[in-house]
Length: 390
Image (cartoon, rainbow, N blue to C red; front, side):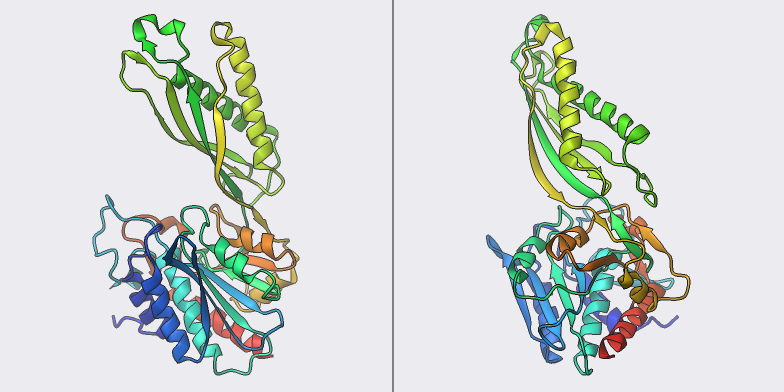
């Protein structure tokens, strides 16, 4: 079968070739996009990481200035490929069975390619409202990069009427996602000979008590916490991801570090959930008469982003639905996005998540996007350009 060679597909092939892994430079990819936009007469600006300008955001706008428009948002970074059993080169686009394989094909260079192509097509049209593009770096490690761009745009850009975050939704309309807060807990104990273990405070035991407290709060959240239907797990969750501690089996550990996260529905607040966990822990330690004076862990917030919850009756949903096939459903997505930060910056803006590909293939070996999904996204964005002309 002859591969689809639309402009979006050709651009996606080029974007996949950039190994723009989080925390690594993405300026080569950004420069390539800027060159394309410039050739279409579209000016763009960078908002780099102050400590490393090789990692940078990009903003561009086409159409009239000073009026609310529609912002297309995508991240350019991808997750690593080491240790994954790829059957084709991860940073080389491979056409097979109506799909394009490559790291970032679904998450989310497919949408980026469609969005840049739409921007270039809009450059020659009589737009009544602007079409805008925001490309970010380091989204995969906690929506880090886009914050620099939002600070740059603050006070210089009318709040968009609609922001479309093109994460992979199979072109369904995503109206919400949970927020996330990532924490690090350092548990301190006393080093000593394991033959006299009960005489010392064991940092790993303290960490175990913290995990037990987190699991207790998780049960409470599942049973009686706020619920938001539409998610795979319709309540807030607590998850311990890493535990590191101990030097040797015969030494009572003096330190143990945990990394854990809280993913909250819109009606919950991570700080309140954390407070409940620490209260449970304090009560648990107090019951341990042997070491009731043991210091509680030092817990620090490492990263966070807010939840997103766009009302089902928002006019912007009707607008987007009119650009998609009849019967396109709304959905909640079970991953985070930059959408919550855009909403936090522009309260009056409707933020929706909609893009080509499936999240089920993201971050895996042989990540791919269906050509039919790219075509569907191209049609949606072409319809959007037509709408902005009216």
